[in-house]
Length: 327
Image 1: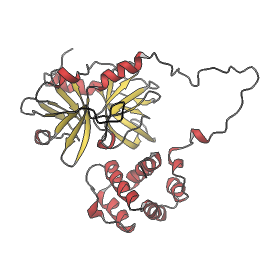
Image 2: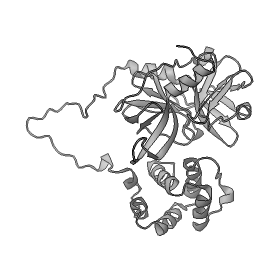
Image 3: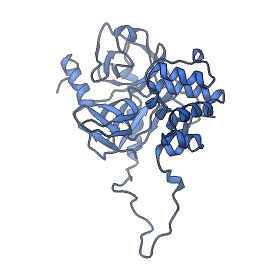
Image 4: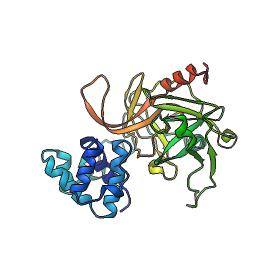
């Protein structure tokens, strides 16, 4: 089957429980699969994404679920998965909620939440324009996303491009997307020039590198500003999930936590989305997406199911320290 939300749910739970390579390898072997045929490198989410893709092709997803459920019989998500209810991993499915007729006096048109999701049509036009600066990064052993800023600089995660050597071995692909007719759009490939500019922060998971040539001329640049995210803001992510064509997780996605360093939100992503810009509803960049799954909320003992990005102000601080950005 094509990758779907149910496999995403299972992937994220498995990645949280079997979070090291040896643990994942043991589950694969116990399920009757051969780990030597699967890319087991990278973070836990990416590893389990690769495992489940291979398991789906070999009709082994149920075997993996059986192994996990046998080892963790009290785990409610594995119990649900063993019963074939993978949706239970992400909570109530809105499509399964019984419809209730309006009570007398109810309006037939109304806002469905605390904030309106009605937007001017120019919202789509501006988003399409900003998306031109989002690129795919093809690197050894995988792919990631990134975005162009002025002076032909590329922003992505440290874990996507952790060194100048990794940058030299990578290629930026612009316009990697489909046309409205479902055909491949004309792409442009650029080498990276870390000898000119390269800086990175493992602590805040960002890297910046100069792109050889002038991609800004054709694909524009995203302007950065100090604009802190706020809980309950809507966010949108333009990304290359799974290393595939450019996609967007659009609008009705909420910021659930924000502080000076990180932003957590409910927007959909996949491996390959790391390095994507997180936009607010003004299409300003507020974060650099870098991880997802079961995360611990900062300053809390609560473990939550969210995606997370680096507050863009931490990236701006780093650029400023290297003389690449000024107020």
